Length: 390
Ligand SMILES: *[C@@H]1O[C@H](CO)[C@@H](O)[C@H](O)[C@H]1NC(C)=O
Image (cartoon, rainbow, N blue to C red; front, side, top):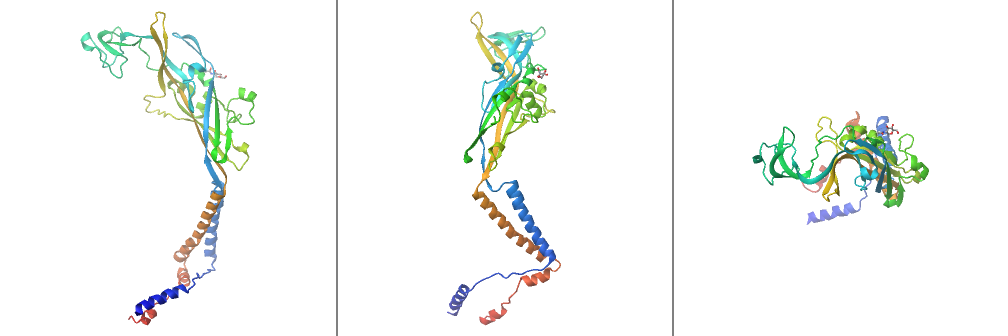
């Protein structure tokens, strides 16, 4: 009975109470300096880093973009099997158009007049033979060029290999020509057209900037110092900006990255939002482990010869693929991120007193004095005896 009454009493007491924190003012140059210094640090962080550097008052959006590219240039080759030959964009850009990327042929191994007939397989462990017994009719393997006919024939004067049914004559070169066939490709130019959009801010722009007129566009070439806005790039410049040598890269081919960065502050005038170009080699060129370097693929052109027999020209093409990548982030003032960052800044200011308290109570020489003042202790032995418990 008495116990319940006591409980009710304390609840009533609790209800009719008002709590207010007691403020301890420490008049000390040292503590004051520490306090102001940490406050200054937090304010500097909020204003300098969050507001100015990271633009915490802005809402952001990432870029949407489309890219088209057009390569121009003429190359001339003069080889024994092809004769004098002109190469234009329709010959060396494969495929004629692509998505965010284009490929330029720089080197090739051509095998002319292949037809489906029989010839000696290239020498390898699986194809070298001394008599017909070593060859099995119908045998084929992944690395081979055709299906064996079961006969052993002369590959050269000293080497005999199994005969195969294949596109003959077989391609015989293994290493691409050096210097590259289309060495002239270094002077080809490419017009990269890029439109970007920031949907959140309904902002559109393209990399042919408003001040570029068609007469300038017809003759300009991108140069970081003199023509940084020109969207026409010389292939050699692209490769050299990535610290690579064009003629070396052209022999085995490779992959280049064209990075277009659109970082825009939309609180500023629209004309300040311009693309920045950077170039990088993307396929790994490891000089210590140069196995299977570069980029190549085979394709063929088919036609019928005079006898109506299907014939093809096989081309093993080496070249440089240019991948255009567009990055970007735009920011514009918005009240929501502003309030969020102001709130976070105020919360950080609250943290200052915690830090100062800790320093004052643990590191200062007069910490015991401060402790005495900060904490008031109330002994409850007297209260206990009032309740009648010993
Ligand atoms: C590319 O053009 C430059 C200057 O017009 C010229 O000196 C150079 O020989 C050309 N390169 C090739 C491979 O033709």
